[in-house]
Image (cartoon, rainbow, N blue to C red; front, side, top):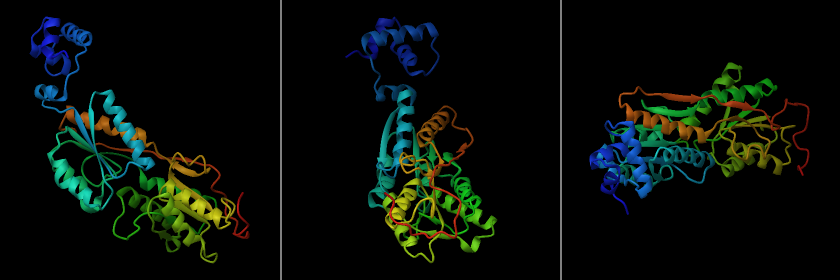
Length: 345
């Protein structure tokens, strides 16, 4: 396999010049850079990470901390991060562990501290355990996706505005009995984004003079969690709401499934709104607030690499707008209709 010395010899330059031409560190004329790159291509030379690190002081590796790989949002963010890093010639070191787990605590206390990387993309970080602050303490650039609670670069939608818009959409259809489903299942932890969504819902209800009618039903932000919570919430006809805002689309889809099994027609007798525009949203004709997690992953890489180029860059917080996508899971309230009309086909 060809080495840097072979490339330098073929291009007629020193090894140091060849290294500068291939890594982009230090001045090299355009003509020399092209000659070195052509020689490297002809010889099939691929610089190793360790070789680049010796010249540039960088490892060309970015650490990605993520709570789960089997959830749509996290998987989409990861795909965007990986795509953007590969385009720029960076490796990805992935650390995935569920919230509040022993392996996650071990990851923060030991594994991340001894890993060599140039920066970190942190997805879905837990505010209750100050994880973002712990990552910043490593002295590496950090970009968070979905968490704005610390002074760092961050990418997200405006979660507060998304839930407010979802709630106002239902209010505009005449609904007054609106419940918010999802988040904080054990009453001790809620992700930063979920907390902002709950706050947006409560603000909209308060602005409509319905603060006393606001209801938050706690459950895991998953489809099964939404299903279980909705079965309990909708089971009592005397207290069931006419509309539900799901903390995310997965909870909203779980709610629709529960309603159908209870014989409650959506949207004739129960309107449901989600947040995310999950890949299942179209299948269930779910009205939702759209976000683009794949694009958020790419944007996070852009912010991180900008920090590597200019360490004193002020913290940038990218809050992408969430667009209301109206499908057929919402309709004007009908107070006179019976909620039980038989199972949907």
